[in-house]
Amino acid sequence: MKKIAIIGSGITALARAWELQKCGHMVTVLERSDQVGGSICSCREGAYLAEEGPNSIQVNSFEVDTFLKSIPGFPERAIYASVDAKKRFILKAGIPRIVPISLLSAVTTKLWTPTGKLAFLKKLLTPTINPGIEESIADFSRRRFGNELYEYAINPMVGGIYAGDPESLSLRHAFPKIHALEKRRNILIVAAMDVIIAARKKNKPRFKKAHTFF
Ligand SMILES: Cc1cc2nc3c(=O)[nH]c(=O)nc-3n(C[C@H](O)[C@H](O)[C@H](O)COP(=O)(O)OP(=O)(O)OC[C@H]3O[C@@H](n4cnc5c(N)ncnc54)[C@H](O)[C@@H]3O)c2cc1C
Image (cartoon, rainbow, N blue to C red; front, top):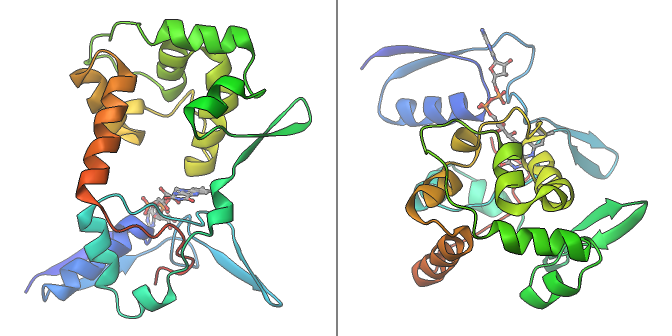
């Protein structure tokens, strides 16, 4: 048994502390603020539960799924995403536009102009750059999808996931899988299809909404 100190009490630290403790180590978590959870912070007002930070998790690996299920009480308390939540909207010029989720809706959507769609098609053939170069999500998206898709697809999506600025978030660290895909396949859409097909084959378990972690 080892005595281990972990600095910070965000989900990264708590997950590691939980695993180390299960292995029999004595773990002390040190936190500078007056509450645990880091970005994860829930508050109740009357009958309502609101999340100040993350509100959902996409279980996209066996390890995460196993880990979550290992937490007593977690599977029973997990709230699955409603099918209604599949519809996402992005505000453009004051009008909420539904985010396309099929090829047909991507072609017909008013979220992107015909010029933006053509730019996207042209960008599909953009060759990869040196994988050693550290690119921001914004630079990668503009290079790969064009400015309009960056503004009205990637930027809001990244905001929803990280609440961060894509200009200063590293693609390699924020979306390592996309970074790896780009290294493997010159045409990103082909690489994305690989992933979708592989995911279907694996038939992974998914639960997308889980309000309380610990
Ligand atoms: C508004 C918002 C919405 C989000 N939505 C989602 C979502 O829906 N789904 C999703 O998967 N992700 C989402 N994210 C991202 C997700 O919340 C973070 O990736 C994750 O919570 C980060 O956890 P962490 O433990 O790495 O860091 P943090 O949560 O930042 O925790 C770090 C902790 O360490 C403490 N600390 C730092 N330095 C010290 C020190 N020197 N001494 C002691 N303590 C220290 C901090 O006080 C903090 O408590 C969202 C983020 C935000 C901000």
